[in-house]
Image (cartoon, rainbow, N blue to C red):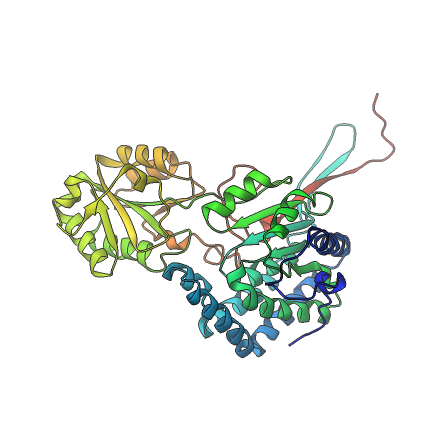
Length: 443
C-alpha cells in the first residue's frame, strides 16, 4: 500500500497519532496546511482533463481490491475499540467492513470513474437579439469539507465523487473509524499518484481531536467552499450551527411507509420488512409505519407479527395494540425520533390525506413511500408529499445514490437550495455563465 502521504500533521511535526491532544497552535498549523494544499489542488483539478480523475479512481479501486486484507485488519482494530467503548449494535453495523462491503466500495469507485464527466457540460445556451451567445456551463464547487461518523465507506465514496466532479476534499471521519479510513485513504493516494494528480486533492484530517472540527467549521472560510455533514442529529446540528460556509445535508431521516387500503398484503409485507429491517442504521430505514384504517384488520396484525418476529420493537397507540398485545405504548416523541435501530412506531390513519397530514407534521422531508395498487391514490401521495424522495411500491432503503445509478452518494440532502436528494458527482458542481460576443457594447 502507498506510503507517500506526507500529510499536514507530519509537516507540522505532530505526527499521525490520533489520540494525542493537540495545542491550539498545532491545530491551526495542521488545518491551515491542509486548507492551503486543498485550495492549490482544487485549482489544479479545475484545469485538469477529466481523464486524469477517471484514471485516478480506477487506480484507487484497484489498490483497494489488492489491499483488502490490510483494510480489513485496520477495521478489526476499529471494531475492537468500538466494542470496548460500548457502541450500540447499529453503530457497530455502520462501522464493520467485510469482503462484500469492500467489494461494494471498489465497485462504486469503478462506477464513478466510468460516469460522464459532470464538469464542462453546457447546461443551457441561447442567443440574444444583440448577437451575444450565452451558455451556462458546469464547474466544480472547489474545496469540499466532509465531516462524518462511523462509516468508513464514506471515505471512498466522498473521495470518488468529489474527485470525479473536479473538487478537492478534506475528510474528517469519526474517531471510531480512524484506522479503516486511513487504510482506505492510502489507496486513494495511490490512485492520485498514478494519475499524477496532487495529493492535496484528497486529504484526511489526521487527528480525532474535536478541536480540529471546530477549526474546520469556523476558521477555514478562505479554503473551504462547502461543508457536508454525514452522521447523527448532534453532528448535523453542530455543523449547521457553527459552519461559516454553506452546508449541504439533512438533519433527520424520519422516513415513513404508508400502507394504503388498496395495498397488496404480500407486497406490503415485503416492502415494510425491507424498509425497516434490511439495515436499521441507515438514513433510508423506515421509522414510522402508517396503515390505512380500511385494511388495518387484515394487514396490520400480519405486518406487526412480521416485524416483531424479526426482532423489531413495535410501538403504537391503543388501536394498534388491540391487534397484538406485544406492541408497546407509543408517545408523542416517537413520531419525531430517528431510531436508527430495530424500533418502529405505527399509527392507523384515515386514508391517504390523513397519512399526508401526519408526514407533513412530523416528517423531515427525507424519504416516504406509499404501498397501494390504486394509481390515483399513489399519484396524490407523490404529488402532495414535499420530501426529497417519494416512492410508490418500493422500499425506502432504495434512498441511496448507488441505487439511483450515481455510483455512490455523499449523503441525502433535504435542502431546497443547490442539491436535493442523493448527492452524487453531478450535484457537487456549480455553474458559470460564458458570454461570447463580437464587439457588442451596452447602450
